[in-house]
Image 1: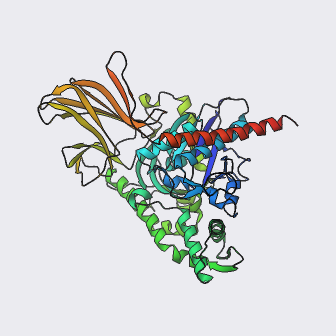
Image 2: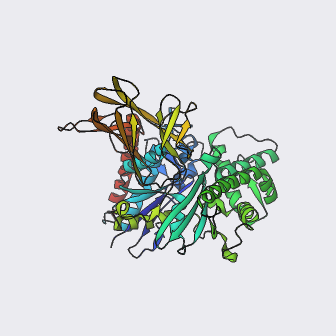
Image 3: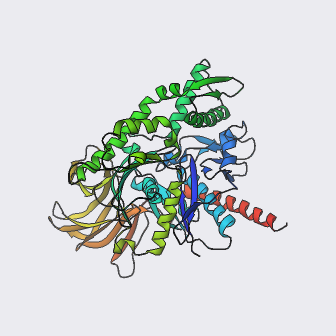
Length: 555
């Protein structure tokens, strides 16, 4: 019997699910890493360099010996070369510190989840791969980084899917119904408006905290507000060690969950500093601006859907809230107050806004359902997609010194292919610049305004071209949001430019014997040194797995 796997790589918790051939998804408990259904996205590097993930790693946040070896909220830094904190890597008593790449931490978490599922549930059955979820606001580089992390973890990536879209697939949506998915997790906020027609899902609009607010927003920010309240109430307590900070973080998360169910609770401070009473009213006042920021992201998503609606206003039948932080009553009440009256028509009054029963696991289940579709329908892109996704970003190339021509707009479907024709500007031109700019405009051309490209390379002619010679840019974006630009001209070879998503060396190229095709990896998403570190970390995790298996054979 075939099994289909989906992984929600979360900021605070990660989760893996399976889907059977019938289409019923279930979460796979990873008992080696967590007592719950989801695994903490926390990693600790032991004295021998071995990475530990999950509950054990989270417990190390509060211990003097290992707090400085522990890293959390890794996903918030995806796309950057390194997480900002330096942590201890080395033998007992070592003070040697280094920064960890978000790809490294993510690869270890993904490997742990996938390998545990393989061992504990499927045994000798070979898994075909997994669908990995990503925030809707991810850039092209962030998408490439997630895919790279999964590949280094030993996972065949069947596809990437936006988290709110995965949540929409997991919930029962009627044909003709339009829903708004509000996904507030531990570290990011994404909002998507999704409609369903027969078995096809179409994303009408997407908005994200990283774009609208220009910073990430998630449960971590509410936790930090609780820590601030508690420290101020105790008289300005300021933790000065890593393990005290770890204790505060864990207590804040617990306190937040208690205030979801109760009107007041005690916040217990580290180092026997005592405890303070925090009321839900205290909490709401301290986080009022955070709630307002959430509403800004929702407003923008609705405005985008309105712009494309036939009558200028989208009709939303239901709001579905997912992500653990959506359980906070203040979020639900704010959405009720602002949008309740507007969407009073055409909705199921009793359930127009609901927090998913699977708020923390529905995303992984939706990813498993999507994996089932991809495996059963390998020719999805040519035969019509089950899911028509959107990106919040537009992508363009420079034309002249100060202008950008948008090749792909945020209003275009994720799966995209189009050919653009450009002309050389002078006689004897030796080549053209191939660059790619990320932006949020839906205009055909925009001012460059000092924007830096996400990559830039040169397409060199085989011989000098005259003025007004035609150069074609064939732009292709796959369903994972990764872009390739194939440049061709009668004055040069055909070349393909893209972010590297395989194990190709940075800036490597090859020319086949026919001399007609040059494949060029513009920029590897991680350095060779980081890739070496990741491979070593995965090897150490695999050595542990083998030891456990050998021990099991003794009994």
